[in-house]
Image 1 (spheres, rainbow, N blue to C red):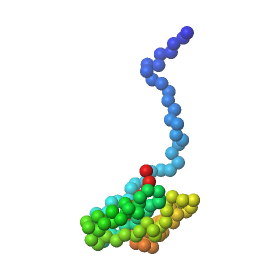
Image 2: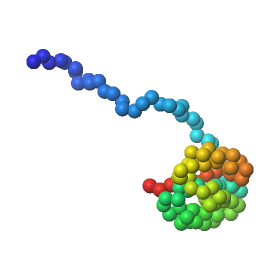
Image 3: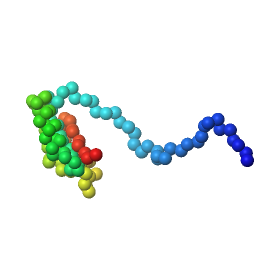
Image 4: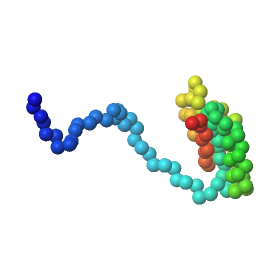
Length: 107
């Protein structure tokens, strides 16, 4: 039986396909949420209604001038028309003057 000397190195294959999209830089962070409009997005799968109420209460205490656009305005971000709904968000955010987004999803 012939033995090959591989010196501890083995060929390995990465199971994922080639990357299909280039990474993009993240949007710059806001200096403050004071006076900003924050959209709430939710997939309706976990207690987002409760979580967003708590977040909104605390953020209003920290930043009295903050405004929110409720998750009710956008509907679920996880549904049959998910792709279309998400594609429409940038235009909708612009119409509503949204500066930032909190996106809640189930885990």
